[in-house]
Amino acid sequence: MTDNPDDLEAILSSARDDVHREVSGVTVPDFSPNRRTGPAVAGLVAVLVLVGGGLFLFGRDNSTVIETDVAGTEDDTSSDTSDDDVADDASDNDASSDEGSQDVDLSGFVTAIDVRVPSDVVRPNRGEPVVDPSFGTTSERVTDAAAEDSVTPVQAPASAFNSDGSMLLLYKAGGSYELYDVESHELISEFAIDASDIEDVFWSPTDPAVVFYANDSQLRQLDVETQRVDVIAEFPDCLGLRMNSSPSWDGNTFALACINADFNPDNPTLIAYRQDDDSRVLYAATGPGHLLVSASGDRFAFADGNSGDVSIFNAQLEPTGLTVETGGTTAMTRQNGVDVLVTTGFGGVATGSVIAFDLDTGEPDTVIGLASGYPFPPGGTRLGVTAAPFVVVGAPEITDRSNWDVLDGEVLLVDLRGPEPLVVRLAHNRLSPSDEYFQSAFVAVSPDGAHVAYSTDWGLGDRSDTYLVDLRN
Image (cartoon, rainbow, N blue to C red):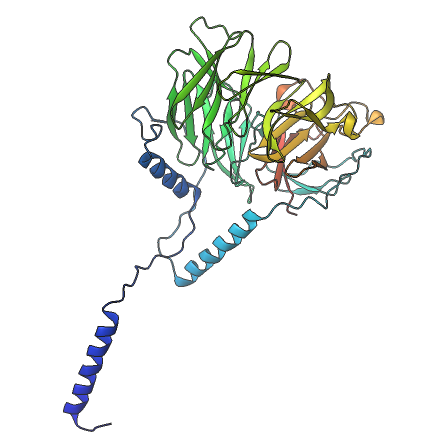
């Protein structure tokens, strides 16, 4: 190396010029930390995309905000993100993605069809896990209802869990809804939903922050995080609107019932409504009942309120000629990729707690019933379905335990994903037999089948709370 300062300066100058020439043509992207997108942000993205696509239901002039006190708090988050935080977030993203893609493993649960009389177990406090002696599963009490009160899964055959299984929507007797975090079991918020009926509230199958409901002559959606209400569609000729079914699994097709100008609920006008083109197909019912839409949106079912029979319609609400006999809760899901109607049958072509009717052929599959080795369905059996092929079953206890049988006072889960249904017995719900509505055996299952919720008074008759079973453990 030269000792001459002038020569050293020349060398450094030449080196700087070389480096400048090498990097001047390189485009360096702006730094953007890999941060997790929360449900609220995800919902915003969805709104922007839909608005860009021209759908009318977002950002309409008639959108309103619920004016109600919302109980709940949000943790403050710092806008400063260290390199370590970014790395942790990236790791969390990978982990959650892998977990979400894995199927829940039901192989270790009880499938044997044998009588298991429940043991006396002390009712746990809120947040306290309790093991069911008969089935080995662990339930945790999520709520703490006041005396003579009840907090139960939303009263519909659709799931009380949102589309990604992260939140649980419960109904508090008296008119309000409580939203819980599924992982922490903590209350997120409490709010009102001005629905036509408490059973007319359904989670969106695609947006984890949105619930749909009908009110007066409008189909609406509520963002449970922001409490923003948007009008999806208006039906000015309806004096009342009912929504008795979850939408199709893509969230596009709705089954509605319109009480028209003569205000005769016994002869509603049935409506097949599709969001993407705002189309409405009408069908004048000749008796009371409610309409359901299939998972694919290609079939509808009208449950006749007089006979209990269900007539199957095509996508244009034209009768297909198929009629199935039902006797209890009726809901839509899929079995091994095929649209099915699931119901409880107390006689006729099939008898059982869970009967799955193929919507193309009308053929029944007795999943839980006499033909599959189970006893006659208990009175008060309730079903819950989700936007995935899972069905959860609940029934109250019987008064005399000396006559106990399989299914009495049980919570069961049905997996319809494969060619053969899998039935697992999860827990005794210890629900007192009662004719009271809020003493019903309300049940719900998350879309991934990882969590099951059920309500019970624990046999004490004083209050009903919601309990959660984590099937991943």
